[in-house]
Length: 234
Image 1 (cartoon, rainbow, N blue to C red):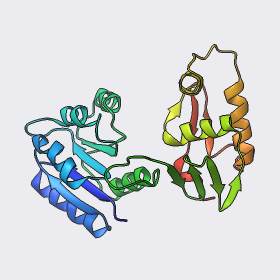
Image 2: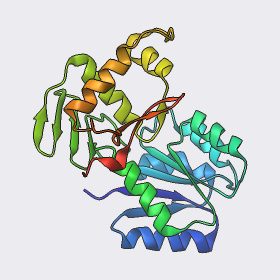
Image 3: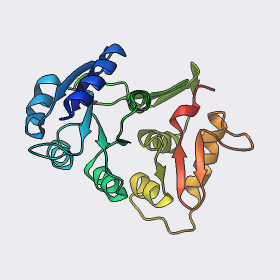
């Protein structure tokens, strides 16, 4: 099923260039130029991904993201010419999934889109009812709580599955131990409990990531763990 992309870009030349490029890559693309039109466009077009320019006439990208995020559950990728890191912080807090800086390189944008889209297999209309995540040779099915690596089922304990599902839903983001404890157990990390670390070791072993250096579920020193989306084709 083709992925539908709502491209919100008021620069006529750039918008036409990106729309033509994405269409040629097999995506179904609709372009809007005014932030005021986006809620109606989402309702009508039901995109899987919104590419949202930060600076728009009417409502800016932040305003649009804030307005639609509670009801739109697909991916949102911001385009921005800003060099201010705080813009990315604000966007992520509002629910953005990724940022691409201008001037936009179409191949870079395509790579980011593919990264976002391969995280989910869901119904059209923006990712509702996500029940399966696929990364290369790894498939995680939430409804049946099954995991397959290169077609072979991997048996996990309930706690291991919950940890893997959480990490995979935040692929390429670093999750701290405190975040993991709060999400999985509803408590704060006390600095001593190593249960998450133990489960990480078990997951790595079962998912063939137990070499001298982990490449799929990575330890980020002093910060936490990162599920690497691009490492599962090996």
